[in-house]
Image (cartoon, rainbow over all chains, first blue to last red; front, top):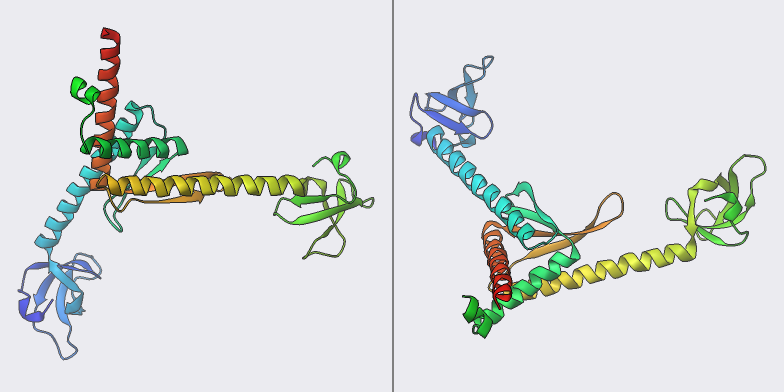
Length: 139
Length: 139
């Protein structure tokens, strides 16, 4: 963050030192600002303001939002596994949440399940082109 | 392998995947056999008979089966991706990997939205199956 944006006494998030409180936002000749860290051994420290990325409140909000998204992914994984099982398909999405390149999960699936999912997607596409008589009947 | 099952002059595969020709028992060491390699380890040397896994012909058959299974899985993945794209679920990524035991697995990376769409399709499919079954009983 730019030193002009730092406010004395406010808590910030530093990439390097995590939670820090700015004691003096005016940088010294070395460009470093004086902060207080939460470590007992390190109450006063001069750090590079570039390592400060946001206020601690903003960081906490982002962390909670990420946690909520993780909870959603965990629910989606659980529901996916239940749906596979309800169709008698083997395999499962792992409980491990992946975040890169996007949020989601990795599913380990046997050949029969891959084939069944392919058939399901084909059927979905066919339905898009018009419902069959049976589809109409069973709603 | 059991030394009694080895045939002099026949090619075998050892536990590290090397192609070795069996030259006869090693009379100086119990349970050891004399072998020579095809390209590397050309000179005659001895190793425990248990290090020879099976004949080289069996190894070639095993490798062909592994490759065929890999190709089959890759083809299934390609078909799944095509079906996904056609059904409005682009960007499905999958890969074939081998675990430490040498078994092949297919894993599918699913983002949150892909998880949701596939889950809803599977749930819909399970519902249709149960309705069809109920209808059949009625008829």
